[in-house]
Image (cartoon, rainbow, N blue to C red):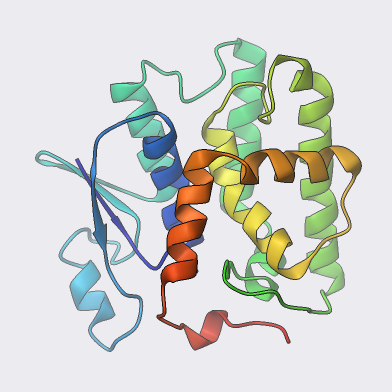
Length: 215
């Protein structure tokens, strides 16, 4: 398997499937593509018609989009264990993952992932609403499943992969969170796979001006 990703400091979409593959111990080749340059679309178009990262190449099969890749990996290589085993928890995990995948546009725009930085911004009301909603999701999950493990649903799942880049955003820009959400951030940041991604991001030197938000 090959996973095509971009700059680890900025590419939140790449972080998601990389974390799933790494944390579950699957063997894959990492292919890094810069997001800079006038030939970006041409370069990424060699991997998928979306001309975006991430892209998973598994033999003759190509899968793009972070959530689609995670679903494929869970189904083919993890016997479905990328999601919680309990039916109700699994449905909820899929719901919040889909919500993360399709929503929170103000948060994405105003607080781009930038792991190397510590920045201050004045979030819009829309971004503050996004932060409050994410805080509520994390708090509810930890209240219900915290007695079975440190992840959103006790054990590690795709839901954690989907929200891991948000943890990085909150670390960079700060956010007013509940105690349970703050503990979730602490637990996720202590994970060895997450530490490996963060360590690599901090060693990068490439800069993407459009993602250098805040002061």
